[in-house]
Every structure is written in C-alpha cells, then in structure tokens.
Image (tube, rainbow, N blue to C red; front, side, top):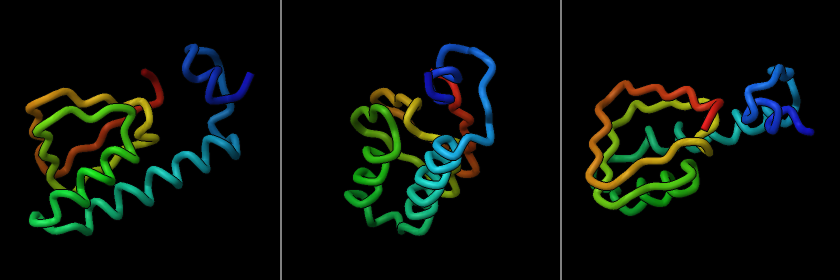
Length: 93
C-alpha cells in the first residue's frame, strides 16, 4: 500500500514520502501557473484547474492567489466563486 493510499484510508502514513513530495511539487507548479494568469485568460485558467483538480463544474471562477496541497482530491461544483487568498488542504477526499 502506498503512502498516498494510506493517507486516503486515514491510516498513519509517512508525510516525507518521495511520491507525496512529488505530488505536492506538481500541484504547486500548477497553482503557481494559475496565479500568474490574468483575468482575461479564462480558457487558460480552466485548463489549469482541470489539470489540478479532481473535478471542476461549470461557471467556476477562482481568484489568485490560490494554493492547495495536492489538488487531486478537490471537487468543485457548478456556479462557484472562490475569492482571493484561498488555501485548501486536501490530503483527504
């Protein structure tokens, strides 16, 4: 069982695991890229959100600066506005 799997099952896991570190780095690269976009870059922002999150609904607007831990556990529904300075810690589903 991987450390990611343990974390998802609420078991004790090694937070310093290389795979978890790499997943955090991947998420950080994506949210930093998102945070560098301009308001007019709607399609680019949508593309990044779809890479970063598990699911993204319709009519989602997220203001920079945004940060998250992994991204892949985050599900966003329809008609959502996320204000600036939002941080989501998503080690669990």
